[in-house]
Length: 346
Ligand code: DOR
Ligand code: ZN
Image (cartoon, rainbow, N blue to C red; front, side, top):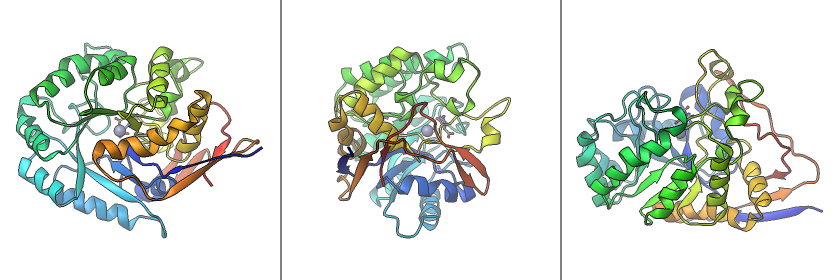
């Protein structure tokens, strides 16, 4: 028997679209299901000023497939020299929805990120005043900290002190991967939210490393132990308003992933809603999927929910998704959840 589920159209609160031919190749994969997405600014060079965000937004709109109903929500990349007035003007004009903090060197194209947090105190205070959220890549970069501990250490060393210094700042812990991240969010008030990716709800570090290294499961923050994945599923399926979807879908061409020094990033835009329906159904929480994917994010950001709806349909036979998206700069492998998918959105 066919099962269907109609929900408010979802948004992706953390997405990498890149630029040029890659943008053109991957954008259709997002606009198919999503009404809006927070667009990450880690281009080369990064999107650090309002004028650059306006130009990037223009390129995204120009790359849009015809008939698409999709709004890119732009962000600025925080650096130690970010101008608070420029940030405030970009926010006042409606151009940007958030500012992104990358600790310097934490991940792909993060060299211009923040090393000395004193230098961004003024910008953070201004953001708190105007109600502009800070999206945070929550990993320390200290080489002496084990890669699997970097999120938990970041909470104690950087995030909690930062939030005490600027208590009114709205903060999104991006792509949390640990039970520690979940617990920290639950211990705080509604000024702190967290995004959770599709892939971190599905894979653990064994999937990445046992039986041969799987470069297409390599991302940052790296997938952790199973107990952490379970904590993330509990958080996402709880309906708690502080947790919402941010896929962190991050396209890299296959040769740059399947390499002796492969890039970090999982590309999941194509089948995210199908994967999520599977995860939520398995957790007996299909009724919470709309909150996670479509309601909690807009509520955190103070935006209206999408007026359109999408219908998810469960089919008896597995649904076929493309293994790869072909772009003019090479193939991009689509996230393989490791189980057959039965839900489709078309
Ligand atoms: O896996 C990741 N890929 N994590 C990030 O934080 C950045 C992203 C990218 O830009 O490729
Ligand atoms: Zn990201």
